[in-house]
Image (cartoon, rainbow, N blue to C red):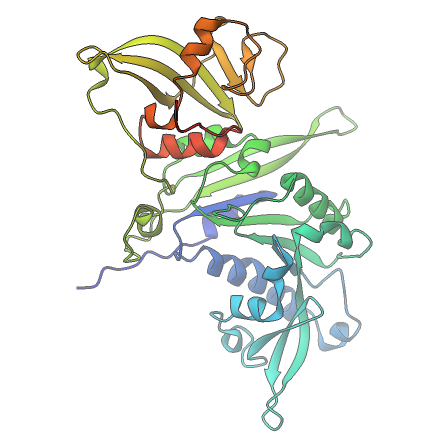
Length: 385
């Protein structure tokens, strides 16, 4: 008997009325469908249906609530890509038969029909816009006072690089669209691919993300740095949802099967300790702090074989003053270093210890820890002694 699929519903996070909404989790569970259906089309059609035919002729820009579909690169906003994005939405039903499909023209999105005689698309009412974050500066001189929602798809990256200073670019784009109206909501949608994501670190969300379980929704306030006349802080609210699993498999195999089938964070197989942790003696400790991730590195000696190895595990406490820390943080303290293979401390003993930090000699608490560690650090782990 086939197992029922639990499709994602956007109602809970939408009810929080947050300014910025991050929705992430399992692939193909309905996240994108809900966003484009409820946030993009339903919002527009509700505003459209409230207007009379006469007012529509005047193009009431402040009454029609359009959306902006945002992708990272220009190649992702080609007309056929955008039209396929909306292919699973029943336009005919939503518009009560007035329109049947979507058409994209000059980066604007329209409801449309197919002319029965010519078989060509006939554009109707404009419902939104599409653009790329990589060219966000090009939108600064344009007006989008009819946009009330920005939908940014695939904000978490698997293989492609992020843009330089990407969160800043997104905020610049957001400012361009909102124009100090304080009405535009931002929707970031992605799969649970990698926790090493600039939005999570730049917006201070890592502590929340690390603790979230599937089905959790968290709401926080982040100060903008501006203040009202009475001295109170002007904040932005951010809602973060780790979508509940759909309860069914994607029927894939391989090292990323749990991410694709269950929505777990993507991780690659990593070497784990061959014995119980109790079978080792700790000789030395160092810390790693990159992109808001903190790890403790322990130099361990096997009590039986005397073999010396490194063990990496998560660390959530305050660093001790005497521990050597490798970090991307700018800190003038001598114990803060950038690269484990290029320390400024003149010590032969320390150099001999750090020289043992090689790929074949490092073990991790679990696969996710190892994956996070390798993605977060900004130096390359050397392979051989």
